Length: 536
Image (cartoon, rainbow, N blue to C red; front, side, top):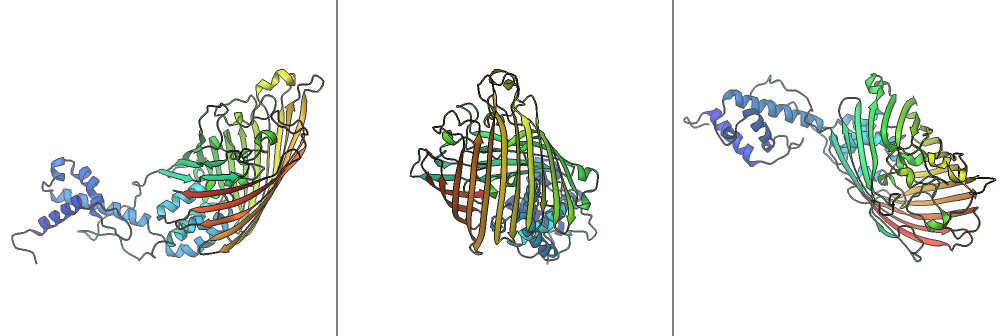
């Protein structure tokens, strides 16, 4: 019972301001009333320093303060409360879509809020050929949130002072920016460390930011510490990987509800070639190193064997059209078409120069990819064609431009997150200068095969066994000028085996042993690699 000398409204104001000044809390569904979060509201609603320091508020000012608090807290609570009814569907959709690219434990062992999972899933869905429909975003987010949060109780909106207090559900306070980072350091060692490219420790670190609103327009940018330097010897190891503006045509035309996705991207993006195009980021790695087809900075005897067929990730500037069409229950077809600057070089393909940011090719390259995704099978085919830069019009090619064509096919077979088999073949036909008057150009063919198998050994803790057999074959043309090999026709074979272990929190440790079987003139090499992958 109140003391007769103390007015209830004055007592309420006093308690409110004590909480405002003393509490630094953050609103959560489990603790929805941290009054410390009202400090900015006090300053914005009462407008003066004196009032924030304790001067008595009028009844209207206090009511406005409470009203704004209720609006914000209800919006936050609703934004962070998942629907338990969506969890079973989300578990199924997670298995169908997310484990196609990465091992399940990297997500299921990670604790995030509902809004954080929404941002993560949307970001993953924008990766090349991900095939994740928008209708799956909320169920998957609810499922992943439920793994580390108690089931929410049914509660009504907060009501203070007035039962009919009007409360907006606006979430305008949620930032449109999504910052993310992946730290995936690699350590590789061999008894013959003089032949291992980038032997020892290498920090594979990625950082990015995405900007999204409710409009069809979004943007993303990312940078990485590379495993190579730029075309200049003194070049930086920090590289801009992506800088993209993306327009959601399906949303703009209001037909995204049908499951059809149609996006246009412009800027610097990951060119969708091969099955690894959607998985060329470290957080999706299943082995310490890339396939021989696409490896970059992780080979042996590089000066003797030359570069890969197409080092990935391959980022280039241009325009990308991407569309996903649902054709059945859990089945979708994705079509990608792009125009990019393309590969460049004067006497043959130069992959370092091809990564430049400027348009340094007089004739752009064109390409595309088609893929079919289902819960158990993914099939895909890719092609790319172009010519090298204008400089090849002069000199040893006698004014004739050098061309290249790259094509490939891939398949992924899997059962839930237990067994996985991946097969990929790719072929590159490219011309190189011969410095011969009667025949200034010659054909160089590079092809290869990648077979990867993975089986889960333990569920908790999550442990998997992975094995890989991959090859890289060169025919035609001439050996690299720095090579000690006399014959330009040779095949590199590699067998890899190892384990993947998921740690609490969702990070993963990969341990691999690689045996390289090299052509005559080069001794075979064994390499042991260790990689830790953590996403923030």
